[in-house]
Image (tube, rainbow, N blue to C red; front, top):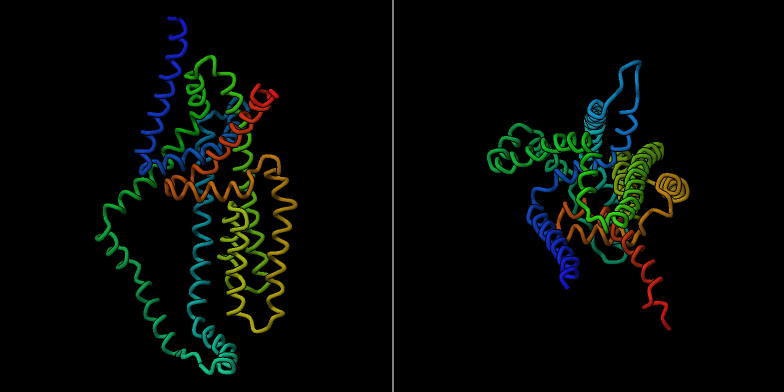
Length: 360
């Protein structure tokens, strides 16, 4: 009897310990976002660090620390390049749109007024000069960046300081996580109960395979599709090609959301910019080719149909994570859903081999 109790009691202790850990994690959710962002980026970059640390130049061998520094420098360079190139371009295009909004309203009125008068006997009361004056006034006030920044700083100083602190925490945590990634994983593995060790490590390996290929492949697809949509819409003559293309590509991690949002915005911008139906055709062709390129070539090659989560599961996981835990939940939605999917596959295999299923 004593032996049985000794065998059962540790299981309850472990369950209680895991439940307590999840409870503490839930309480700390408001401050977990920078740590989760750093962990996800470190997880994605870990294979690159593994390859870099094995490179040897003469007698000098790049270690894990130098490899981590190189990756951080590359990330900082990419982010800086994006800020220096894309942000001014987007600002220029948005300024151009702001200037042309009165023209867009006039064009819209010319096209809709005859139909409204014919069917309903009413007309749109749109004053282009008044719209231009309002836009100019607000644009100039928005352009006074220093005044606006000081006002926000005085009104929300503590919130801004907290946001900046979280922003500075991300690279610091990322450095230590990426440098010590394998050591941290080994320490967690050593804490596993020996009788669960084999099964747990097998499941963890499958989760790592599914999640790693999914995240890295999906990131590559998002970047390639952003470039494709931006270049394609620019060749189609759309003035807002860059922001719409980037949005359509980066929202691609949610199935059909990227192409749906991008097409809707592109058609709206085309309706305001173009004067004939024929000019809409190149825009529609870009999104048609983009859907074919993504679904038939990029996703199968870079993500893989067998390891990608079902689109409905991805949508539900993102919505549920955001509803329950906010932005932190969105960050954890795909990792948790991938782990659950692997666990359910093992549970299904055990169930199909059990007497409950086989017994007639």
